[in-house]
Image 1: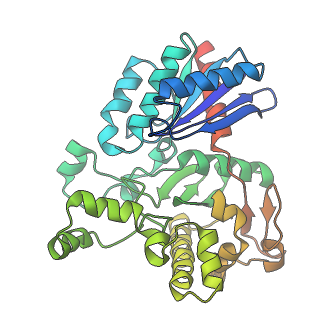
Image 2: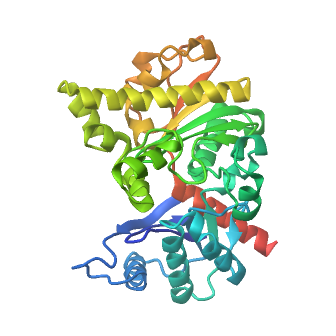
Image 3: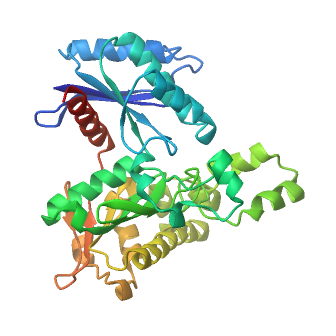
Length: 379
């Protein structure tokens, strides 16, 4: 079985084809600058047509199914969904909840439906894994009508990544996922933490939008909501300008001028005090969430680091894990400093709580979910 995974953005499409017998990538790539001035591709139609040519050149002419990443599934989608007209309409109806992402995801779906007629297609939602959160975790303390009428609540994101690394942890620890309590940390340009109790998400740091929670590359994370009103009054910024400020000019970039952690750390090493503070704030916020989610879970079997920063920055992992002995966190700094390609454990030998670095693979998780939906359809 061959499954094409598509991750369509507003000006890009990332794609991979998996052979599901051994779950290996057969071909993949990224097309960007779609629709931009000077680009050879004016639309997603042209980009996907180019992808088809690439697949044919690689000898892949038979695709059994297509899996699409969709950022926001709201409360309606708790699992991946086989795409039909009703699913397309539902994704379109949720555009107000994810105005930057769902329109692009939808464009990828609609183009793929035209260019791959008759091929089953599946939507895999970033929010679905977090739909097991209880109301005490997902509700905001605002008038109930805002939830009932406008669906104002915490949804959470990166669910595909959190679910994937949780499954990988269970396999590595040779335990059932349903028997494990985990804290998963997806740390990259976008960052989120999730508390997983017996295999199910029970709390997560991102909220109604991906802006809430941890300090990120350009997003502010948790702030006083009254700051929005203060800035509008005192600076004259419009609501749209404030939203852009917190989404695109804040986080690490706002603190020290660069949003990539590698650049932040390089600046910090030169003695730049703004970069040193940015790095410290990043680790501090992650540390706080580990403490909070330890309290939520009561007992934690493993803390998992993933994402570009989580997988590759031993320095951040060391800062995050420092002085957390009260929660059973005992890092072995020598093990932490050794970079490995696969899963790595870096807790001290006598520690009960495992500290794991697990490379994420959201595309493979989407392919697996697509294959499962195909199996359910045929059975």
